[in-house]
Length: 79
Image (tube, rainbow, N blue to C red; front, side, top):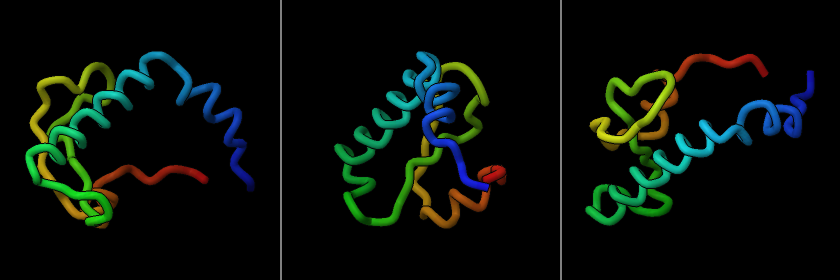
């Protein structure tokens, strides 16, 4: 089955709540870059520890983990 990416964007990624969460994730990555904890192309991701499933990510503690380690903990999604 082929994913309908336009529908997925319209129904999920384009929502204001998701745009805010994406901006917060990007801000956390940029903060870690500024602190020298991650670099472009290093294969590391910023992981929010005990992040709520909904709502704000502000003030949530972060750590740097490998992409593989972070993806193992993520829930499996249907294609």
